[in-house]
Image 1: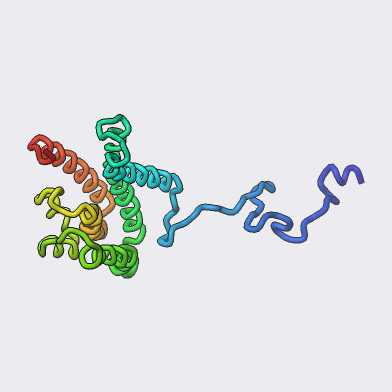
Image 2: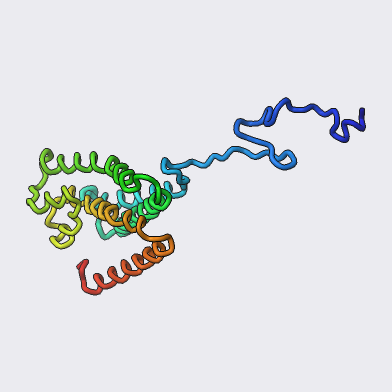
Length: 232
């Protein structure tokens, strides 16, 4: 009997594979356990990257801190203080949002490329997520709340998402600050109009080259505008 136990003969046997194991676990190889995957997946099948949620949170704090400077003089915080100068760096939070959005949207488009209703599914999801709240806020700012009057040109730009050009060339101080913050949404929508078609038409290698070219062009254009004094 002792010999049988040492060799494994006569040891208690499980009545079925995985008996007594955590749900979803299985035995592989020489009896090692393989636990079920716990990866959080997006509705489009992509894996959720939890670290990006932290980056998004930091970007939100940066933007909120910068906009809080509008009330800084009223609460006794001088605009030339170290705190105010640090908060002025919050503009980069919006840029972080743009980078995150480009990364995530490109991933969604690449994974769904070649599937039925590629364009319809993408634009339907984006529209349902953005349009209802955006147009509700615009209606409040234009027709309900006591805000500075908007010109016909500004209203049209708000309805069709090109107010970033109107604000840039008209001077931001000429517009209501509550409506001025919508410039970033205009850029986002313009990105949605162009990028899905490029991802659909270009092979992976050419798409990567297009991304690299766009980064280089953006840096070059930014440097040119700064040298021309575009931002004052």
